Amino acid sequence: MALKTDEKKKIIKKFATVAGDTGSPEVQIALLTAKIQKLSSHLKEHRKDTHSRRGLLSMISKRRRLLNYLLKEDKKKGAERYKGVITHLGLSK
Image 1: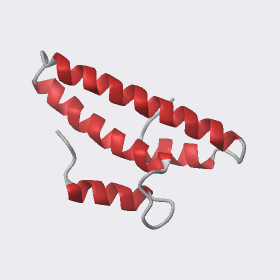
Image 2 (image 1 turned 180 degrees about the vertical axis):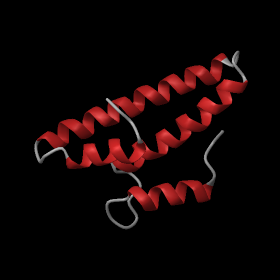
Image 3 (image 1 turned 60 degrees about the horizontal axis):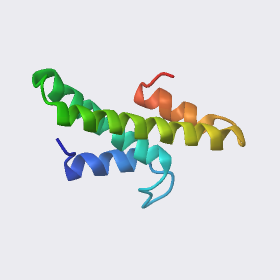
Image 4 (image 1 turned 60 degrees about the vertical axis):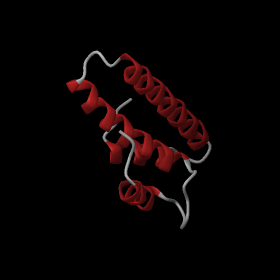
């Protein structure tokens, strides 16, 4: 259920703010979203996999914390980064 290397590289390239950027909140949120989507499809097939469900919930909460951080930091400069990530990934608040 982990992302493949080429999938990760595509996501990082798409959301990186500068070349070689892997730690910005945008990249982390995008990677978590891809993992969440992959794990959600797994859980649709394997409904009783409680350990994976717990991991999914922890990923969702981590993504929420990163989004809150991005929104808080963006309020100082305008909410362009936050809105861009939300619309690009198809997330809604």
